[in-house]
Length: 257
Length: 270
Image 1 (cartoon, rainbow over the protein chains, first blue to last red):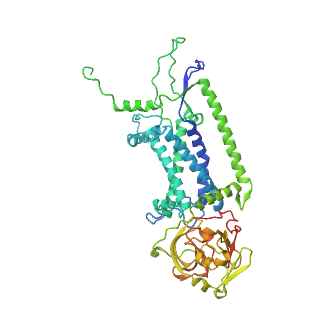
Image 2: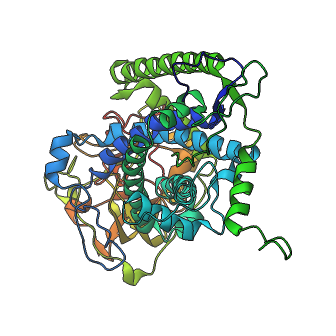
Image 3: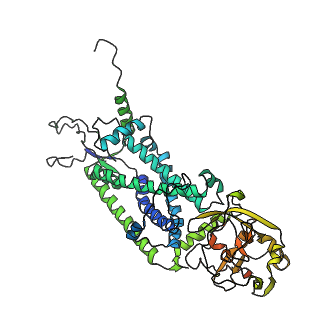
């Protein structure tokens, strides 16, 4: 933070690049696309009211719960408009896939994956991070780069889930034309179950993501818009014009989201 | 602690350094550049959000083609053009023991019972002229095929079922002379009361898994499953598997279709 006493010194770096342009665009484009896919998907899902989704389908042959009970359906005003749902789903599905592929290709080619893929420390570290974020244990946080271990795991998982959503989607959209893919996912019914389960996963991810973004604060959020995150303690400029500059403070660890 | 060899760096420190090195060369901005960047990003983001909202509104309220917004109808047609390239593939078949009678899901065109003995199948040419008439024996005389497949409803459910019938391609061969080598582009099928009608492309109709079915689970079709003759295939949603066929027309115009008019994909291919 710059204090009021300091003039905006053009030589002092105050913000560092955090999210590259392609990352930001694909992230924000994904927001309406995922929303449309879930919304239109619910219209499709709801067309078969006699066979409500339960995790038991094909697994234990027992129906655990209604994914969306009737009361929720009525509150959300999800009319049973299957034709419109399919029309949106099968057109916007391509945009969702293209956007995801664009993100994945960029992340790979640009080397950003080095900051995102879990390393061998991530599984263990993520437990520490999780317990810390849940206020269960205040152990010192393990070393991290731009993303902590829990973020590496979840941001990698969510991309894999996107791929599974698209592939299971194709498997149930064209089960004859891509029947090998349908077989890989355990057949039509199982691919359908996985497709819905991944959707629930997306919704859980979004809920936790929004919560964590809110906790991480404005500067972190703004970095997904501007690309740059404010440096917590900008290093002083070694300048003969300002010999009274205080000594550098200890840099704080950022837990950014 | 200083008399020995230098203490090895702690693993955590090494890791922290390695992580930090990844971001060491990340570009930085000074205050005024950061403000410019913020202004530019907010303006770009605002403009993009506005464009998206306008586009969404236009999509929801703009012109429609057979009950869905025009761009989405074009989307269905794009998908059709794409998947037609693979349309020769066949659906997996299952062991007969896994199949059972499926639920009755649609009564369009079969609301009233008919006298099965009085039933006739009419075949029309592209110009609407009558090419022929058939009784069920004409169809059962063709080579019989039994298919145990997963029947899929556009609503989402599926059911493994065994159909018995003749391949449509064998039936169409009865009209080979009239059809000529070029055939026609499409086939239109209509119930006797004309309430329900489907249109299919010739390639889909000639697929070896496209049956004129007269048996379900080894028994003659019941009326609510489309007796005496219906379409059955694992490669189209159930909406295309018209029950109680009254008329078959070979045509070059893309025939309309009951559910197509109500907003569904015309192709409905699986």
